[in-house]
Image (cartoon, rainbow, N blue to C red):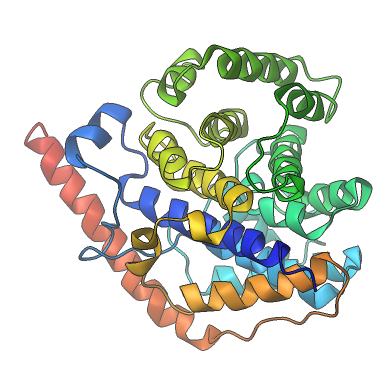
Length: 357
């Protein structure tokens, strides 16, 4: 097995987890409120100075495991992912995207997985698609897995396009040699050719290119999209901001996450996407150790994600790989702790709001 790919895949998974967990405590806060409440460098703040993972990392893991269980057959992948989504729903996740939750309900009511998607342009498909970019070097196969995987939860073409953009950039990051940065013109052309009949997307790519060339900050780029109060869950907001931060700080995981997460809004999702791409670009060693040392979640621990990365790296180069065992039985208890903590954050925010803070 090519030893060079595994640290990049591990970087993608651990970068997803790091960005997700760092952004989670300030999810939906405005940019100004984020800076006021969380001064200083990014650190884990979710539960007594420790970090936990949201649905963004959970769905990424579910996608990866479904691919491994399918052996590369798209119908088997869809079947596996749809059942994982069903079981994820009955474990009572807190804070999952509305479209993803509704799709899970539709699956339980007997709607086929090819028809279960909701007409939504949310970012639920995009946050889990970087791993598909790592697993399928062939662009045709990659596009098909992203398209059909997205439709299980989101059938709006914009949701698919955002997911495909993330997968394509993850594939590009993994294919770029260490120490090099993808050519800007080539990168933008890759984004443009994803779709030719969506003027909003073409305009976004033009603005990305202009911002990168001008050295615009991530915060100023987000402001130019009308997101000065925070990045929304609309996929054409989430994905461009995450992509902009990734390429503007290419190879620097800390700078990428600091810039993207502090834009506020759906910070766990933007953090997860930007972290995945930054980790895929620079590898696991580039992720600041403190981002992972204080990450406390089970069964999706740092050790579990590393084991999963080993199998994904094997799959990506055509070596036999297997699903990584996980203690799924513990998830209901884990979710009780997670949900109670989210409720505590909600009450605290309401209290601070009443105090004018």
